[in-house]
Amino acid sequence: MDKTMRGYRQIPVYLKYLINTLLLVALLVVGNHLISSGAVNRAQKAVILQIGIYALLAVSLNVATGYLGQLPLGHAGFMAVGGYAAAILWKAMPKNTGAMLLGLLLGGLAAAVFGIAIGIPALRLRGDYLAIITLGFGEIIRVLIINLPSITGGTPGLMSIPKHSTFLVVYATVIVSCVLIHTLMKSRHGRAILAIRENEIAAEASGVNTTFYKVLAFTVSAFFAGVAGALYAGYTGILTPGNFTFMTSVNILVMVVLGGLGSMAGSIIAAAILTALPLALQSFSKYRMVIYALLLIVVMIFKPSGLLGRYDFSLSRILEKLINGRLFVKKPQKAGEDRG
Amino acid sequence: MVPLDGLGIIPERDAGSPPILDIRHLCVDFGGLRAVDDFTLLIGKTEIAGLIGPNGAGKTTVFNLLTNVYKPTQGKILLNGQDTRGKSMHELNRLGIARTFQNIRLFSGMTVEDNVKVGMSHGYTDGVFTDMFRLPGWWRTERRQHVRALELLDLFNLTDKADALAGNLPYGDQRRLEIVRALASEPKLLLLDEPAAGMNPSETHELMDNIRMLRDRFNIAINIAIMLIEHDMNLVMGICEGIAVLNYGKIIAKGTPKEIQSNPVVIEAYLGEEASHA
Image 1: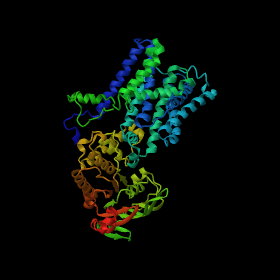
Image 2 (image 1 turned 30 degrees about the horizontal axis):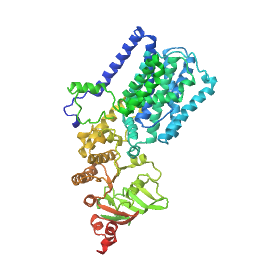
Image 3 (image 1 turned 45 degrees about the vertical axis):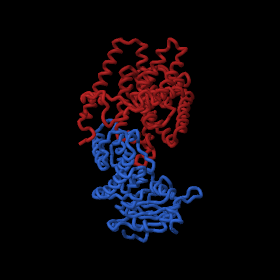
Image 4 (image 1 turned 90 degrees about the vertical axis):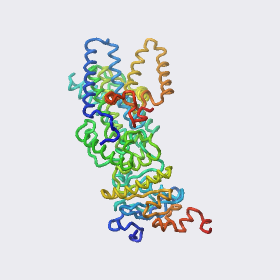
């Protein structure tokens, strides 16, 4: 039997999944009830929806940055591809649930196709070169959108896109996406991706097809960015190329870095903070960017690995500690688990 | 040890089967420098072979040629009768070569168990979607890999550290974990690059027992040949059956530990000419 866990009671995996599923569904139902009952006002609802969309963008970028260990700077490009693909479909279809689902899927798939196309040449390069090539890709997408007015509406953009992105749609999508990314990472494929981040040569020598897994991680990252782009289109109702500049890519990257490279919970928390903060600081908008920048500097000085480092929140781990009466005691042999 | 085809010697017990590794006239040039010159060697199916030589002799270069990190300028390598030319590193791993590195290359941010699981990179068919949606294939793979990882870790007494981060292990354990990770791919040929470097005498002794155990215990189930580079002569002379001595990229001697120890050319290569006059 498992010697490492002698005397440490574990919750079976299927039970963990059951508990987490129930909790997430409850969260959705309660949240949806709060929104529809009018307990939150319009402005607050807007912030909540934006947080969801940016959380998904940050989580998806985290796949390529935190898990795979590359530095792509064109995330807004994938978001744009997904957004426009979904918007064009939605404008051509009646507004119903089927169209909504189809649009989200199409947005993801369109971005994934671009992810593969850009990933295969780009991932042969490393570090700075990869950053530059993906940066170029993001800009090319934006310029293409401007110069294809018959499809994309050009500079003025696409207007009157059906507003599919209700609270339930956004958060159900975000939760499903996060779960799928999580389940991917906790599998042999996910371990191969992490191994590439840790040591590419050793991964290759251990039989990991590094090219395949790099493109896979990049494509998954692009797919969910595309889904987030679709949510964004269904939330604003208007898409203009100005939404998808280099600064958007950088903003998403800042969220990932601030939250902690490789931590999904960190990405979500940082996305929430960095989305809500500028809106909350709107009353003294003169100093908004100063505070924003200061916050980043302070975090990078005192916690360079990001708010959560590589730590990921796990409800079942806390439950396990509770039933073992060791909530505040470190689990043996797990030293360094939450190190930065 | 018995001679084979006039190219080298392999242990008697392997004489009936073709050698696992057949290297013929291997050369590699770096710029104008010939780093490995006319390297010819046979390794028996279950042999423990040693590759020794002074610093800079080209031993690690040979390993890098065997794993296609470098492309040979001339010569060929047959692994189990199959030409390895043009294969990528992970394809070679699938064909049966696994290795460790002179400077440890573990996945330090991952747990000990996950390090071993990464090594089990083939023989599993569950696809990306199977795993994402937790279909039965994922459960099967996870269970199989978990059981196998603990079995392998048990061989090297690392089971109780399965959940620790690899980077937090003491040095000796990290070296041994690298071997376990290499074994996870069920290789036919295991290349160990200075497995005892930086170990104290008792750790080295334990490692020797481990390597012997690999031959004696592993060979019952699967045949494994081990080729190792090492500077610790107690280890090399203690466990290797055939030894090749490399100097300036050339093999200067091949033989059993006894023959190597008394070979004047080898002594000269290690101690310089003065010593042979003395």
